[in-house]
Figure 1 (tube, rainbow, N blue to C red):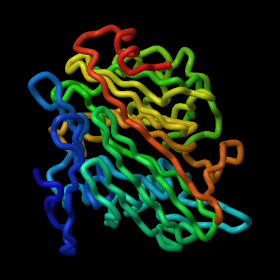
Figure 2 (figure 1 turned 180 degrees about the vertical axis):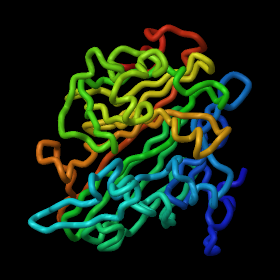
Figure 3 (figure 1 turned 135 degrees about the horizontal axis):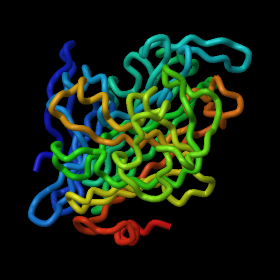
Length: 352
């Protein structure tokens, strides 16, 4: 079984490789040195292997991808309004790559850069990237390590970083999950539970207004498990602004997990663990135009608040010299079975 295989070349001739984690008897992952992309994640279920995330064919497809499939996101996940911020008395202008705003780190961000492989074993891949001062407009030389560790039923991702100048820093991960393993099954048919009593309303450009609104009585209330299809209200002004779900849920203090997802079609369930204060929920509707025929997946992105550098009332997301940044994201999988009730799903995932 190949541990490393060619995954194509970029237009400038740069070779991209795929690194395999796992042996086939449990969870298996395929990760690219381009963007640290999680290109494939499979779980054995009965007599077949279920594809848990959406993926593309080769390196060129990923480099040209406007949907950020599977990438490590940085320096700053989500949006920074006006592609600008002030820090310690100085104004900074970032690359504007979504109209006049900044999204997911800019024109290339972390997701279209080649990372250095520091270590690769059957169950571990350690990637490193040095983001120089001024890249995409950010201050400071930033050293980032992203470590993927595979277990039979879990994939863990750890970000670690240091900087020599204060900089906004909010890395996250951007896989599209459809646990049905079948692109013909709507991603909105998955059951979702998120321990979040609040969310961040956005304006027409999807920039947070600065308020934190209660989810009660809105389509954003997933405190009890529900499908996106059942919760969505096409007349809701927030869903109309985003063309669907593309909103940040504010996780409850002391939350025991970030999100739980279940496909009644495959019987596969997933729990996401992270200490981040928020979770971006994106319904994947942009893929209908960006990648026709690929299907949809749900993005569940643990992170700090979007546009926090411009919102003093939001928790800060600034990394300073002398600090070591660390954030762990864990994806744990179970197979409670097809068409189970949520009580059985929660027990299989050991939800608090």
